[in-house]
Length: 139
Picture 1 (cartoon, rainbow, N blue to C red):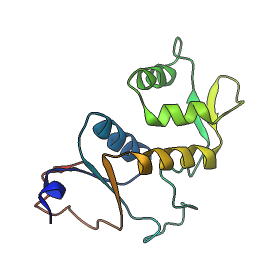
Picture 2: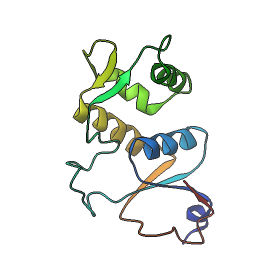
Picture 3: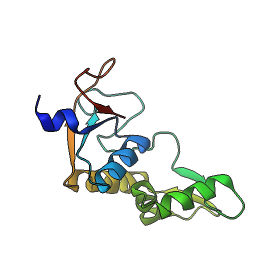
């Protein structure tokens, strides 16, 4: 394993949290290796190879930052440069006071941003069990 791979931040899983963690670390200047098992290892819930795939609902719940804790979290994430919130806002669907998104367009935007980031390397394959001991930084 190369020295760069040992000092990089390894993020396991490209769901909502993993995609955001990889993005934030990369934006801060860190080298990131994002490990995603799909399409090598599939699940019953997932239908695509895309990152941040929403499998149960297309809603991020309330987007009212003045009267709702979930909406406040959305606003805080936006102010921190959240990739997830940027993609959600760009692909929002009418949903009253909720933030709902076009699932495919949302996942596609997150996947494209991650794939295009110069500080992120994507490795497809399952990490079964604990990560290797020579990985210094793991999320």
